[in-house]
Image 1 (tube, one colour):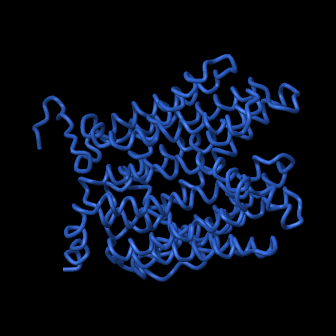
Image 2 (cartoon, rainbow, N blue to C red):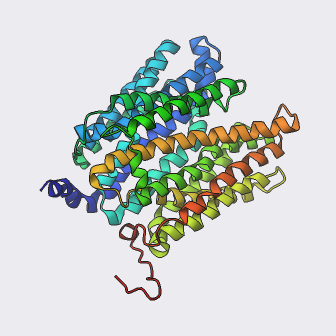
Image 3 (cartoon, rainbow, N blue to C red):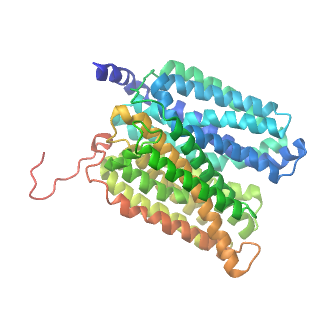
Length: 483
């Protein structure tokens, strides 16, 4: 009977409203992604208003990352206990409240506390938003719905910097946070109307020790990866990463003994989930490094203005959006395994071509390469985000979404770290103080080589993986009776 109760809302609402639900979740995530990237552009102006140095403002970014690292692992348990609709709506409310406090901040200390609150809401929005979609959408519509979720992650870092520049130039930096208010209010209204309340089954006591250990570990790792991209912070970055690894090992030992760990690594034994996490993590190295390396290449290597560089980089957002209506068609014809192998190779090699970009290349050609690269990798992340949950039971769905989102955030930050280390490593070998075109080429090659290794993992997916989701039917092997 409990299974029937659990599934009833899905049967009643999924078919007519899956696009609406996907758009609600995607809009919340887009608000969060844009907010994080817009702020980076405004830091020098904010530093002047707060009468502090510009480098001191980096704590406004890292405090948000810390909050994400602490609370993402707990999001699944919160959704199970209080209901996915309630937690998702509350997450938007907390994010909006934090945004208002950020806009009103009279000092840097006040801003940091407000960013911690805002990060708490953001930490719940990402995995619980995905959980809402998984629980509300019929399996046959999952690919179409998931393709919407990919858009915020890809276009947020692209739209953010030019939007931040516009706000700082023509308005006031506080509007960066005020624009979240109407979006959040509308989002909460739509959540109340269209999304059903679903609770999971509590599998044991809350893992308080695991919550502390994972928070310290993930917070240190995210901080360390982030700081690695800043000059003069190498030693501190290494210390944080080492600290994160130590507490991570301590958490793994603790998790083996706890009946319901805050991050359930036993999920990695589920074939489609574990393979998606590993292959997706390797591919996200490129996704994380690309927004960091491309603007630097165009501004430092090509000598373009920030505005001109932003106009070129927006090609990646166009490629991601162009993919969306075609995803379901491609997966239904090729299946998940073949799509992951082919799209992964095309998309990663496409970004590898960035290593060959030179100022004498025609700008339309560079633009086309970026559009096509983003197009193929958009397929890739849509596939990873969908196939990961193909074999996950309903009872473990909340734990799986928080686990997957944690690794997604971690690997995006690691991508920035690897891109920065490769760039600085190449500069050190050449003895240059300013990166040259060859240094950018080396960095793009490094992240491409790492990401292309995901192909070996993609080949481990079953040919029949995700058949119910995609509608693709693999041909039976010769000599094997069908069914």
